Amino acid sequence: MTVLARTIEATRRYGDVLALDRVTLDIRAGELVGLLGPNGAGKSTLINLFVGLRRPTSGTVELLGGSPQDPAMRRGIGMTPQETGLPESLRVSEIVDVVSAHFPERADKGELLARFGLGDLARRQVGGLSGGQKRRLAVALAFAGKPRLVFLDEPTTGLDVEARRALWDGIRSFHEDGGTVLLTSHYLEEIEALAQRVVVVGHGQVLADDTVRAVREIVGVRRVSLVADDLPELPGVLGTERADGRISLVTTDPDRLVVELVRSGTPFSGLEIRPTTLEEAFLAITSKETAHV
Ligand SMILES: Nc1ncnc2c1ncn2[C@@H]1O[C@H](COP(=O)(O)OP(=O)(O)OP(=O)(O)O)[C@@H](O)[C@H]1O
Image (cartoon, rainbow, N blue to C red; front, side, top):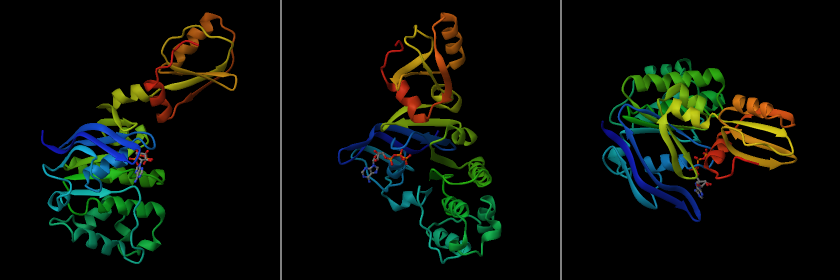
C-alpha cells in the first residue's frame, strides 16, 4: 500500500529535551491513524515534522514521496494545529476562500461547511463564533484544499459532546471518501470512535502500534488502592507504590486481584478502584517495579 508519510529513525531535540527518540512510522494511503499519548509525549512534534514546520535533529521524514519542506508536497496535505488564531473580522465563507486559494484543488464550500455543521454560519464573522464553532471551522479548513492526507492535532479539545460528534462525522466522511488522516488525542475513547490503528507514544518513543482493541488491553489498567501492612503476591499486578499509608496496585484485572486478596485472608481496609490516566498506565507498564510489596 502506498506510504503517504514516513519517518525513519527521526529524532528531535529542543536543547536538552529529547522530544522524539528514533521514531520510525509509516502512514499508508486510506488509513485513519490515531496518535495517542500523554502530555509532552511528542505527538505535536511528530506532526510538526510531518508537515514541515520542524526538521528532525537526525533521521528522515518523507511526505507524499518527497520532502515536507517542499511546497509542492505541502499542497497535498491539510492540517489543524492545536492552537489556531483565525482573523476575527473575516466571515466564515471568506476564510474558506482565503485558505482554498492556496490549493490547486478546492473542496465545495457549501459541502465543506455542511460537513462540519457550519452550514448556517457562512456569513457570520469569525469573531462572533463560539469557541466550539471556531474550532470546527479550524478543522474544516484542513480539508479546504482537497488534501490526500490530513493532520489534526487534538481536533476536539474544548468541544462539547454535540460539537465533537459533528466533527467526528466530518472526519469520518473524509476518510470514507478515501482520505488519509493522522490525528492526535489524549483520549483512547476518541481514537476508538474514529480510528482502526492507534500509535501510542510516550517519552518520545513509539510504545505500541496496533489495533485499538489491542491497545485498549494495554492501557485499560486500573489502580486498586488500600490500607494494609503487607500483601501477598497477587496476580496481574503491573506496578506498586506506597504513599500516605496506602498501597496502590496497578492492574489489568482488578476483579481477579480483589478476589485473590480476599481469598488470601490478608487484613485490609479502605479499598478503592479507579481508572488510571494514560500517563499512569504507561508509567506502570514501563516501570520495572516489583509486583510484590
Ligand atoms: N519549542 C519547544 N522548545 C522546547 N521544548 C519543546 C518545544 N516544543 C516541545 N517541547 C518539548 O518536547 C516534548 C514533546 O512535546 P510535544 O508538544 O511534542 O508533546 P505532545 O505529546 O504534543 O504534548 P501535548 O499532548 O501536551 O500537546 C515536551 O517535553 C515539550 O516540553
